Image 1 (tube, rainbow, N blue to C red):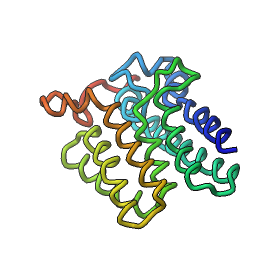
Image 2 (image 1 turned 180 degrees about the vertical axis):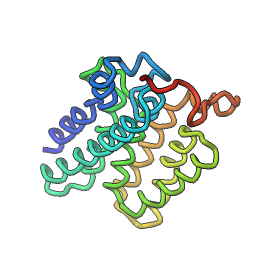
Image 3 (image 1 turned 180 degrees about the horizontal axis):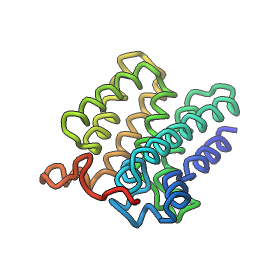
Image 4 (image 1 turned 30 degrees about the vertical axis):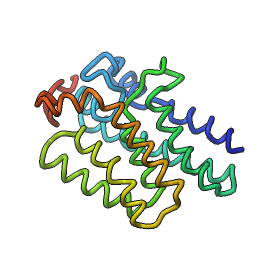
Length: 200
């Protein structure tokens, strides 16, 4: 049942809501516009606030859904619960339904963080929002989120499985944001509100 829960979690994560919503609303492949990323931030750049918020919520919910299903299938097995969140993010990043070209997993990570600990989630998100508000760099805020999450999970005494999986999530995020990190260091990273204008 643990293996089954991980397979299902990957498949749930592979549902690319940014791709589906962009196709429905504008008839486009979101990966061919803006940053080329199938995620909420690029949806904001290309389609505007409404679709971006919808993508953010749905991507976060698929992480929670995967974890909830794993909890049910494995009778509350902590490691399976934690790994299901990881596999949902793997699915989001490399979706089998969309040629393994997905997003960077931050919105889904937000849902997984909520599943690990509502308090750690809240503190991490508040810090992230403040970072983005001050710097206007979504990528920097995203990296701060995945960096502080395992710290707060540890401080709050959460299950070691949650802590170690959150460390792996952070490593995933740093790998997926490699180009953003280079741009941040060189001063070429686009700020929130810059870049592609929403399609009419």
